Image 1 (cartoon, rainbow, N blue to C red):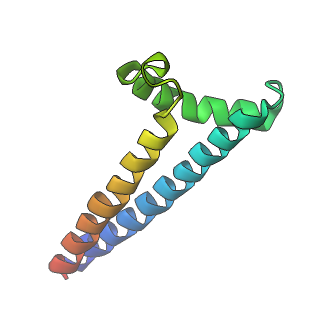
Image 2 (cartoon, rainbow, N blue to C red):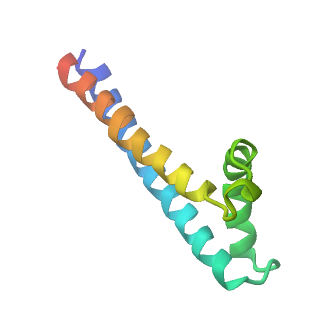
Length: 99
């Protein structure tokens, strides 16, 4: 049982870190959109490639023309915060019960 508990703790910790890093990437992409960066910059291309699939799905539900501004990064950040608060915490609690 200790192996499963440790595995759950490790998975929850990795998931927490990945969600945090993705949230940072979303914030950086949103900030860069204010300054109109060079689209041929490899860093900008990486940020767009990593974030656009998720942001596009959110934009399909809430079009920019409906609100007037693109709030998809805010919605994605809120979902990430929910996942960090609920899913990661639940995994840690499940691992603690298994020990």
